[in-house]
Image 1: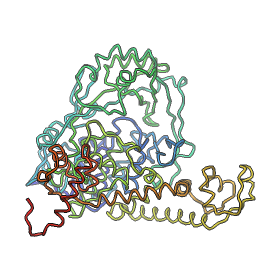
Image 2: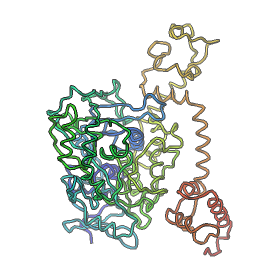
Image 3: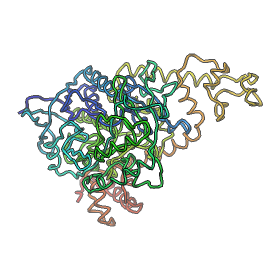
Image 4: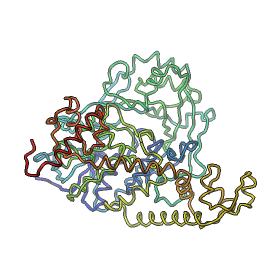
Length: 626
């Protein structure tokens, strides 16, 4: 029946697909990664950057679990910045400008060097099923591919429709064909689907830009890597540049707003609230007299510059007028215009927490098909979908990270429990226990899990153990070493002590930092990395808060342990309204904690649910459940 057969087949080679394929192959399963264009594997369709607020946390977690986005981002990075350093360590987050072509090259090299993984260039047009289980798919050229599990990571390609002013045409990305046949196949499966919209700004030729009038935005003097496995020193190779719109530009936009597909009714899909187009900003934030624009080079060997902050679907002539009205861009040449794209997505409440569809066994979704936006959100889902597809083939239980484990767990729980009516983006504010979900301890939280399931290899595991040992030795040193309070360091800062305290006790003071103690010779240690110091110091300074969060985590885990059978009949429970029954039946929560997070589920309905679960638990096994 099949021309080729694999354990796991991944459809789509964007950021989700790359992680999914690498994870499944890394767990020892024969894996094929299908893409319509093998030259655009891991293409950065929008901004040439990885990380950012909360997104950097996701990349660190992907890396800790054995994923590859962080490694590729470090190697192809051309400018590195640690964001939110003026605030507490819970919200510090790395971000890097990437060499767009370099990132693709590095990612493809990693994938081609992965045993058990085969890259394929072909278009998937139809999925095959037998008795509600996926068995494979058909390619445009007529070949049939068999698979024990299929991971769908189609990005914006499902029935993709591009808008530039009054013009519209089908495409997955500008210059690439949309996936129409596969999109219609997914629609016909009976999933609850909808349309979302995202956009991208124009790209400019850097040779036609006057950078002298812009404010430079350099990288950090000490770049922070994404990957715990990165050992080479990172270097900043470019600078970004900041400018702003003004009232003249706003007037141009308002005068042409009727030509915007967003406001003419041409676009039906819902766009990302937290990354609006420039026309949305001008219309919805009329109290703002300017909006920030950042010029971001797309690489070291290209003249292409990304205009961050100016995502738009306005007509090309209006885009040109806006750019020529901006100081420094008067003569700027547009390489390609901005555009908006609408695409199909499946409501993520159709998925289990493993990212397997409820309707079809062995069929997994990851990335924008689940209603998310962003490379990092997609890659994190791809990793978990690939892992769980491999575990499905092996006949083992899926890996589900809970909200106390990782931002990845928060994102997936939000999606499968609440669904979404707009492109979902990760924020640190979504985390109940964000002080425990820092970038510096992602390996401590997640690398043992990656090792257990088989995607953290021996080299990665050895590096993890070495880091934990370094931090443990440093902690032991400062706990058992007394401070020389006569050192000039303390006198210069007017710090006085009654006796000779341990270093761990003085580090609880907010004004004292371990880096300063080491640099000034107050504390002598073996060579240690800056991030190891920061991680240990954070655990010391916030020890009280962390212990409090640990108690809250235990409460959550107890609620998560109250499992709800998958076949539980909510319709047969007296006391629940029709609306509550519909919500519970749609999501099919796996625990009381998940049920309580479903929008509209009241404390009273949770009490009724607990009561009936107790009745079921105490009912004799031989008794028929109606």
